[in-house]
Amino acid sequence: MVSPFEVLEVDEDADDEAVERAYRERVKRAHPDQGGSVEEFQLVRRAYRELEARDENGDGDDGEATAAADIDLGDDGEAAEVQPTRVEFLDYEAIVDYGWSLDDDDLFRKASHADLAPDAHGRLLVQPDESLLEAAERSGFAWPFSCRGGACANCAVYLAEGELSQPTDHIMPDDLAERGFRLSCNGYPLTDELSVVFNVKQRPELDDLILPPGPFTRR
Image (cartoon, rainbow, N blue to C red; front, side, top):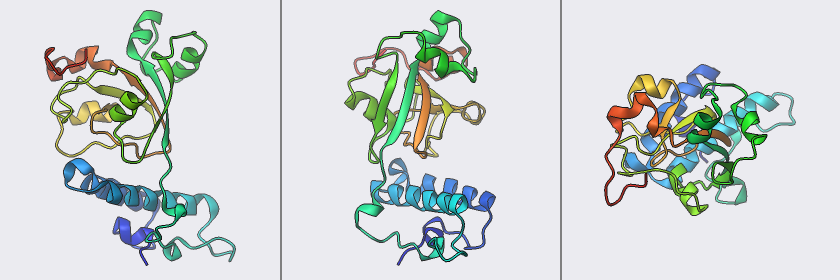
């Protein structure tokens, strides 16, 4: 039996802040680009989701809910499956064209009323074994990229809502990551829903991180 606490390597009496720190550390080590596996990455995600559900529904003291420590994440049944992440996306060029602001809280509401093309604003699903960029491509969208290895910011996106993993070995500076910029080529969703702005490579703060056009670059 493997409990969420064991997966996250945290004590059962850990508070929310400690669980959050443990999750962020474990998900970095489990990231497929850092030597982890998709299965391990999914397990860490599910452990964190189970503990989030504990906080929302109670810790089982009323006898009706299952205590988080008693949940077996080693079960290979359907309950162990991690569901796809729902992503709402918006092309940065639409923001420029309409004079919107990247940090506008109503950005996606405005986009929904702007009659944008399906490839400029829409939704897609990211499967548990896919990066955000891979999911966009599988869905038929031509999002920018170049190296596919975290060594440039051609594939950069801006996170308006949700969280996207980022391996420890990547080019994105901490100050830009703190502002919400991520790389879609090796970013795996950590939340059930995401709202992202893609094609942000034209932002001036990313100029020094962009590779010039090449044979494998999608502009």
